[in-house]
Length: 83
Image 1: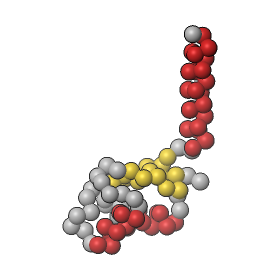
Image 2: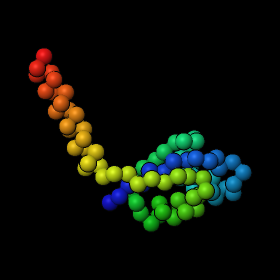
Image 3: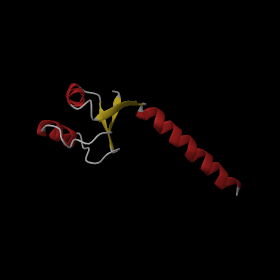
Image 4: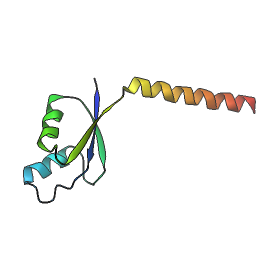
């Protein structure tokens, strides 16, 4: 499944209590703090409720990110072998 990166870009101060609780439920407590969640209907609903307070980005697959780390490890291992 796809992942979503949610970033708090505006404070919930001055907004209704239900919106403050939604931001808190997303795990966001400070400005510019981010959280990653699997893309689901429940998370989409929470984002819709506070869309004026957050920014949402799609995150690339964890499989692709894992292969990039492996390549880095292989390069550093090759450098150690040459030394």
